Amino acid sequence: MLTTLCYIEQDGKYLMLLRNRKKKDINKGKWIGVGGRFKEGETPEECLIREVREETGLTLLSWQFRGVVTFRQDLGETEYMHLFTADRFSGELTDCDEGELSWIAKEDIFSLNLWEGDRVFLEPLLCGVPFFTASLKYEGERLSESEIRIYIDRQDG
Image (cartoon, rainbow, N blue to C red; front, top):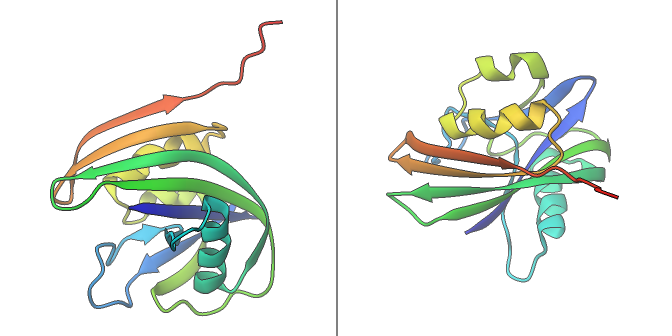
């Protein structure tokens, strides 16, 4: 399964989504960024732009590809999530049929009800690491393994 997830930034805050409106939702009660599954033939950027517009009403004008997170699950298929941040957009925030959207100060993110694995990849994201990969293994809803690889652009002359 291929997905995107985006953390939209404004004034030191991330736009977060409390997933509380769908009856059947693996993310029910959790705070996450915005995004979703690729449609057939979409690029990661096309999926990102479409999902953000569908869930928030916003049109992204500037974004950064920050990494790939692999979710391995004992109860489902492996997910490869393309992680983005965005810092410029146009439009007005609209109501989301998946939950409540709120601007949350970055320093308050870890006080939210997050997936354990989200805490793992949010750390380098919030610290400004430009690009990384993460591998997260879940047994049910419990994170059993995690690994982060940080990529640093080096120019040795």
